[in-house]
Length: 249
Ligand code: MF3
Ligand code: CO
Ligand code: CO
Image (cartoon, rainbow, N blue to C red):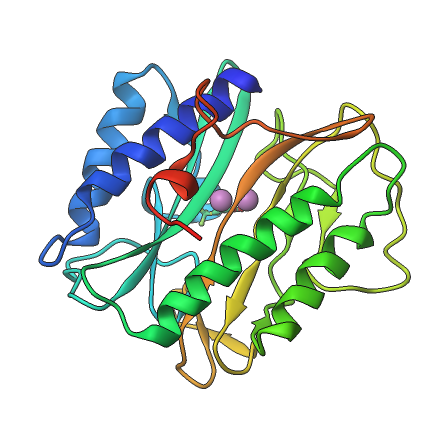
């Protein structure tokens, strides 16, 4: 899991270098695909439940699972790139939201605080903590910044399966009291919105967009639960992921 996580982090750093106005999401998909295969891994999204590409690219009002196509990134866009690699029988899953050129103040706040919310959720992880401690930390932060929290998509157990049974909501619900245990591997991947978190799916049955067309941002790490906290697996040995290199506080 450490090796897969590290590789996913490195591929996401690579993907970040491709982000620029005029670049199509199809070309990002092709380059990320080749990079993952070159490293001896498989891009987990490809053919997963019929998903047609190797990476998810979610621009502006797209919440998640945007399918790469011929659309070019434009100055002022925000784009989440979600990379999952399958290496030595396990998955590493990580994403960040990149800013394309100069973005408006609302978008910058959205990106910054979504990143902060993810790290607050990660900070709630330890052996014996209830799963809803994660959602409570994220939702409290989102509310303080008047941001919406998407409910339909949640973090998940990850390991030999891309999405295992463990569910990690990014909102608080008293009944979500499953205790986290040392050794568990799962993602935290909050999607926050500038307006309402209500969404609908495009006819492609993948692309999730905000109902009010306002922007959404997402960050994701794969984590390992320890007795006293979370180990972030989707980082380089230097402790960096794309969230550190490309998006700052
Ligand atoms: N990587 C996404 C997640 O964080 C899942 C993408 S499923 C796909 O769970 F089929 F759209 F790739
Ligand atoms: Co995930
Ligand atoms: Co992901």
